[in-house]
Length: 499
Image (cartoon, rainbow, N blue to C red; front, side):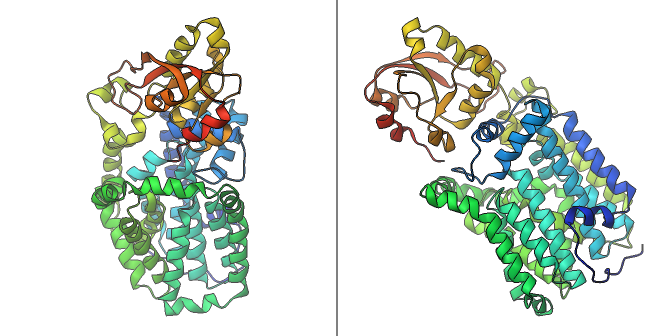
């Protein structure tokens, strides 16, 4: 199989057009289309994930930042809701397009690295068959946007290193800055690339360029709005990080098995080989070092297993390039077979009721969180409607987490419920309930907290999803709390839960 020599230095183009001009392999486009089609085929099964409900709510409260994330994903959720009529399938089209973009970006990296048509196709297949990408690109959360940001930035870095044209720094800075508007996670990639340049003598001349300074300014300008918002709100993200850090040791124990399971065991030799191949290249060692750094750093810091997921796009591209000249058909078949198996866990392929017998949500937590939101809101509405008229007229719906609040906001209006209030993350900032509301229909709220601020608290209902599926909402208790002891402005600080 022939390989392609690096393209001559030229004027950098926008990454999107670069992808299109770099990939002249129809098979790669077919893989991208097939990946999109698979995601869309199951996009309407089950229901919204709790994070999606939260982002829809955040999109109705547009801001430069939020307690637990920057502004880009809520903005995308808002735009999508306006364009698609606020439908589940419409919302899921965005991450499905993100998976197609990952396929194209990875294939473009492989071509830039010198892979022939077969190598590009293998890189595209690996990305489409990666269990982590299949699962993560099913829901609109910060993760799909983060992964696309990593892949686009890595393509720009690859072009910078291969073409030796410092003008590509502008694309690197701009894309990484946009990634920061989705999730701060891409900051680890930026830092790791800095280390890679520091230990790679052949790449250091690229650092002596005014374009690097311009890229740094662009990156800072794009990242600034969320940082400014955090400063003005006393850094609530620090409290969120502190809560996440409580799981650090559990994350470390599971971390390396997750790297194997999430990418798929069939793909481990490809991405490991890709890192090894990059480390041996005098210039691409920059990204090889960055790949090792971000993967190891997340283990050391106790990060969740999917945090370094974006780096595997480059690893797949490099691994496919390293295999150029070898028979690839058998590998492609193995990748597809592995994807068919992992899709049962990564995607909602099983009937929802089957999750009670085959609890795949123990591996893919998000599947269980797509179950039962409309029925839970219907139960809340029945409790609300059963209140005596004077109490109902002064009743707020208060929830313990943003998924419950987002579900009430998504489905509750049609059932006569008021907008939800919650102490969870940015929902706390959108509160408190109206001053006139001295009664609360409280979903899963700590009863001790309710008794501190209400004269009477009783259990009104216990939620069951009816499928026997064990998830975070199964067994949620709905309370009716009457007789608010102080104004909400006084009580509301006690309800805050940044986690």
